[in-house]
Length: 130
Ligand code: ZN
Image (cartoon, rainbow, N blue to C red; front, top):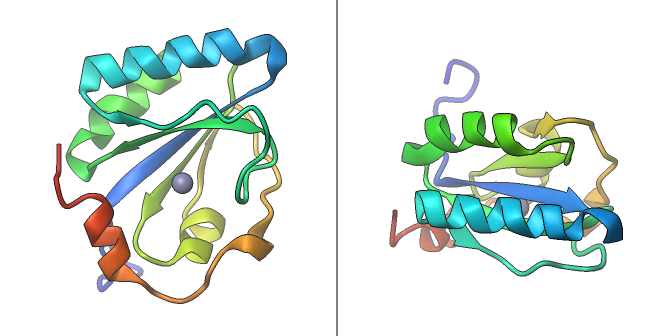
């Protein structure tokens, strides 16, 4: 990266947003992604959690899978909003400055995010790799 060569991306999260009427669609999308790409799927949160304004489900994956997952989500999200962010160890930067949105930009609650660097935690999350 030209702008910040010291900042390493340990992995990515794709948060699939949904509501009551799109829960099954979102669950299906996430389960298909998890199966196809052997990636980790979090719980189907039927309430806003953390900085997320909508119900959501998290997919996490290593940088090596980015070029496969992102196009697949683009072609298969079918109207769902997907929020993608890198995990560099700085939660505020990851969610605010490095955000990649599909479908819409939603307003996050950034007040719950830490702005201190914790690269050990980021490294730990993805250390088992894919
Ligand atoms: Zn995340």
